[in-house]
Image (cartoon, rainbow, N blue to C red; front, side):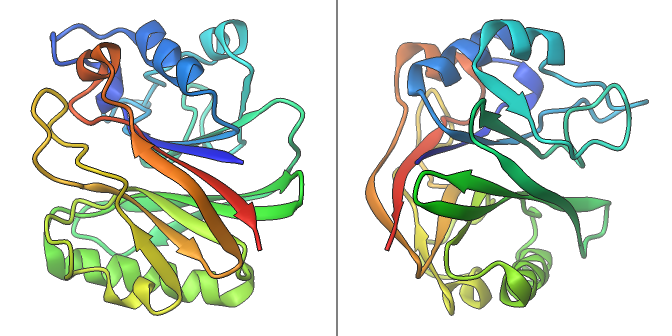
Length: 228
């Protein structure tokens, strides 16, 4: 399975244009099976989707995992999951995370070709003390029933390559495929994966294409995984 994680900044690019079609073009070129999005909904009012569901349906081969709590959003607290049509979505869940402001993560169990894989998408806090609490909450949730064939991906907002994610690193390998922020001049690997022991990473990378450099202030990251 190919997994992509992408903070799309509400589809607003580095050229200051809000272009949801461009985001979908970037995703289509990456050809993922599962996409974990951050900042996929607008923050104000009813939190309408930055990527209109009708456009996703007509322009891609993805379906939106049922995680939204309103008819106008595609996710929860800005996190959304897209799954390639034909791969079954076995279950979904919204996960509350401790924070000064409302934050959460989203979970989907996807029927992969070699068995189910549990994926969690998250956008962690800017302040490390709160990030650590959130990572601990995710680690506890993974320890309940996710199993070894699980991964977490998203904008972890952690600048250090060694600190801040210790609770998750006890059970999962932290993988930073490369520098993903800022898109025009990447200096930090804010976007990462945490890979469970039941999964093997076959390949991973960062999309540094000219289109991705304009799509958002983050570059999308990807990983090809297989069950052990």
